[in-house]
Amino acid sequence: MKTDTQLQQDVSDELMWEPSVHGARIGVEVKDGIVTLAGQVDSYAEKWNAERAAQRVSGVKAMATELVVHLSGLSQRSDADIAAAVQNALEWAFPLTVGRRIKVMVENGSVTLSGDVDWQFQKEAAADNVRPMMGVTGVSNQISIQPSPSVLLIQSDIESALKRAAIDASGIAVAIHGSDVTLSGTVKNWAERETATNSAWNTPGVTNVVDMMTLAH
Image (cartoon, rainbow, N blue to C red; front, side, top):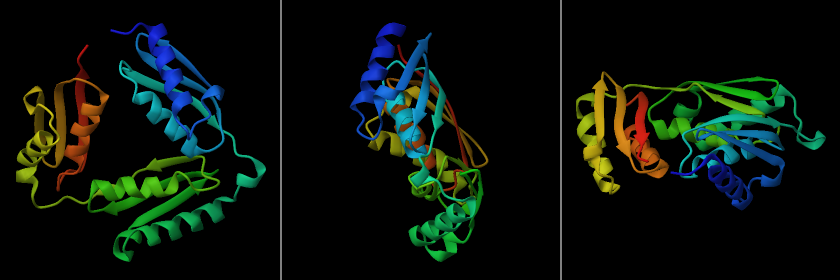
């Protein structure tokens, strides 16, 4: 098990290694395996990438973010301009029947997405399209997923997906309540944890995934 000092060094090294992040400008503090990132970044995309980089490091139990997005003059845009650009991007990224179901609200550069889509990957793709856009300082993804009639097959679909990903499904318990899925048990690392949750989200009919899995020490 890593000490806090070792974990701090590993997270700092990962931030320096990540090409989309100015790692030297981000401070890292660790207490009892909980990582706090602080500092200033040039875009919301850089903030997102820094958070993801830190989560990749083995031994990170949880993370707090105190990163501040500071836009340069050339990157600043009005909320109206951002809203129009986001709406156009979503309509290009999705068929009109899906794109028009996603609603966009912008306040002080922070974008809130709402409405509904058919699949979790569409919800994630909507946010992925918005994060790197100029002028965006934050993204709140409140898009809901329309339930599918195949809810009864959710558990077997998830277990099959875990096996295909070479994850020992025997250590993960899958509980179904309506279209909500709760994953519990123990996984070896963050990569297995992410694969398990993604497998659940990619199953037709799933509208909510609760991750109660723990990392093996």
